[in-house]
Image 1 (cartoon, one colour):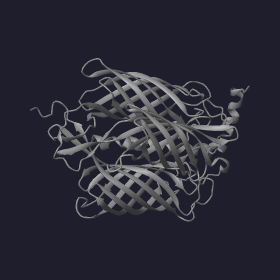
Image 2: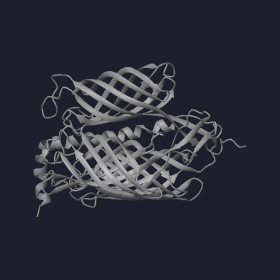
Image 3: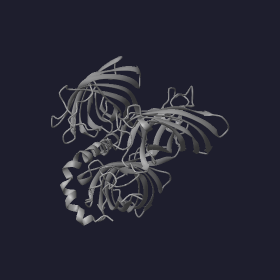
Image 4: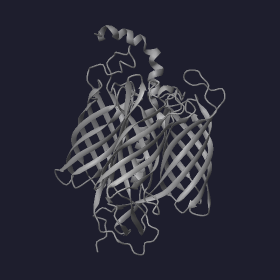
Length: 546
């Protein structure tokens, strides 16, 4: 047996030696910061206009598979993906974005973010043959796939449809081209897939035959969340990864965001993401939830929720990464579009040592989102069209020559990152932007960053080319990148080349620098950008009454 009390002093003496391992986990704190910043994009005043929208097939997908990472040791990974079928001329084609994370084994905290594309081809009335690819970046611990962070995955699945749901199984092949774990860098294995079809709106090219929308609406909620874990008095550090680190884990705060959508008047589902702070810098958590909301009066609801997700790193022992968290609490809705919430719950890592009481405080925005069906016209008397932008990006850093990373090694001449950007136009020439980028190239696997800032594009509504200037600030870490306390800033200048009224490709050049001047690099940013808008029903007291 291990005598925890007798080992405590030796643990404190080894703190300096373990600091680099703990610092590598900082990479996840940027995610919650990024998502938290996305709230103003949906809360800003919308632009009203007569608009025609048509339903576009889309879906959510969950997957599970196991990857070998060492002799006799597997890492189970679960995937969450959002897909759309954007090409009307060829409906089987789909594209989207997704994240994979460790959910079983010993590597809780391993995550990879990236893009997906594929074909879901009908081979029978309810059978589909799904073949696709994933390109992503990220990483995790030194025990899984250290290296550049690049992950390639291809799959071939046979799926059976059951109404809006589908179940599938088949083969997947993962490839980590630049990992130092060469023995398991390439592997073919079984994969399971669960999907749910849920159409979304897109602009219709021709609206002459579009009737006014008279379908159903469902409440959509978006909220930043402060989450606090009061950890039970037990050793919750990773004893297998940090064998001398036996001190009791302190309680720690988290920041994050959740997006919830109601299935009916009381039942709702949601997606949540968090990053840790305090004694758990480097902690990250992604969750799916199912909840029930019971109105007590016009302004108060009692809500219960069960969340299941992936969590880890920050040296917190979730073992394989699975986390279960039931909560209960109250929601106060003083207005039709704003609410406050307080909840208490219990967080349990079934395969790890983490046990904690959870406390949540949230404030957020909510509105009625029309369910996508057919082609319809949305009158500005009854609906607000909320404009926003989405972009896929590739960023390249060219570090200053004499810089060294956290273990005093030189950086590669070019560091590549893959990412996403979301924006909310405020004026015809000014918008807010938020982005996240994850390591892809240059031996900085597990490095990631989240940024928030402004984008100036004068004359963006006119001509084929628009000059662009942007400035951003955010947090970063991981991959032995020496970014000081984690705060970074960047600026860039370039231009948008408009390929279509709502689509542009951008190239910008600029400079990134750590606030504490521990890292600096010139940058090149390549972006493919879409301008979008989503209809939301106006509150009843302001809606047009015929």
